[in-house]
Length: 439
Image (cartoon, rainbow, N blue to C red; front, side):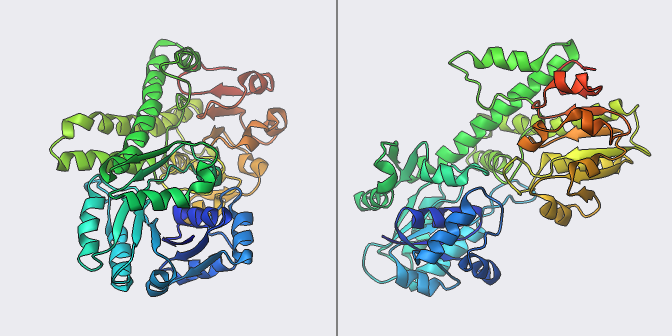
């Protein structure tokens, strides 16, 4: 089939390349001419495992092309995926839909007067958005239909999540829209994955409800870590015992520094804001506390590190391992690691940050911090090391060798992924939120 993907940011670039990979002819559309030129040359604008090779392969094959022209997009295909961003409004926390509205408004005047044109939203939006956009679209293109097909991508696993998703959700208004989406996803559905057909409102809610539930689970175990710190209990054993209950499960029951990025924090705030607009703020009032618990983990980590260096960061050197908000990504948006690094610097420390992929993005976002491309260099003369992003490279570090670089062998494992016995045997003092101090 012939498809367009409007918006070639994280979601759009991955979706376009994956749709071309499974055999469709795809045209990516964006207002950013520089980004379009890079993608057309087979260069990815961000780090995502597996995407670079796929992009080059599909561009070389001719199945994937890029343009800045909405008119060309309308001529190219009858199915248009909208994958633009929905950033958070600064005061209310509600989703800013300007880019979604602009994409639909920009496409509509160029759509043919007849024929089955389908606009498919993949952006994360407040419930009710599809209905409003449908009215807006049909004022200019009365024959066009709207569906909603939310994405469930995890950064670092986005290619896998697109080609082998756990489910595909199709919020549709007509049998024709359902049939079109089934045809598009036929190569994936052949493996028997669930294809859940519903109305557009439910499809919009699925993404927000799923992210809110995951965020709640993360914040719950971090709240338990606070209680463990106060009582001497061990949050990892607690999480293991809870996760063994099949009604609860262990996934996302991982204590630590909490969640960040462009998705979970933004989505729970937008969900709460939309509930307030509907007069249902009490229904999701707990999400405000989920957000507060998550933010609190950052400052608790700072306080833990400050105690390790004697109560003050003045004239102290601090090494930070990790800048991306999660491993396998160079995304530093709302990064817990960088929030901690910045706060430690504000309290008087000299901070040096290492990350395998995100140094350039981190330097652009936090120019006052120092950065190192080598872990040992980042840790030179450090009074404390903060492990803040759980890259596998950090689990493989030799603590005995690293001890020769630091001033004081003390580390805060805010992600609970280092082996305490190995580090303590090498002479380190290891602290982790919700666990007794070791070494």
